[in-house]
Length: 83
Image 1 (cartoon, rainbow, N blue to C red):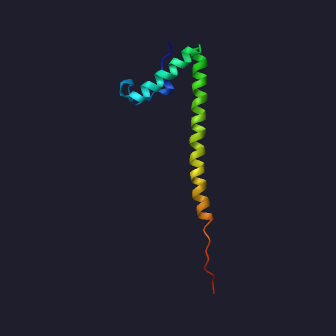
Image 2: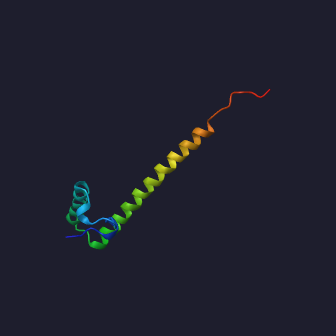
Image 3: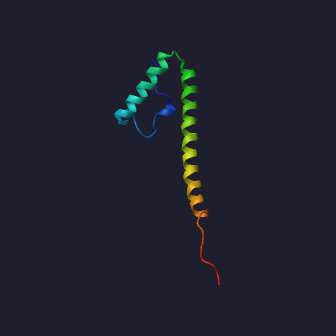
């Protein structure tokens, strides 16, 4: 049975402080990894890739929000004419 990799654990919290939802999700992930017969090394590589995908999504969302704010500012049109 695989254990939770160190990079998935919160360093400042012990395992017993994780929420029930987090424990359930972690348990489900470990069950799937074991079900498909992945080695510890394969599992860590897969979870690192998943972490990278999540990070890219987070960066993309932050970038979209920043771009929308920038676009909103650049779309402002000053209809007043100088005389």
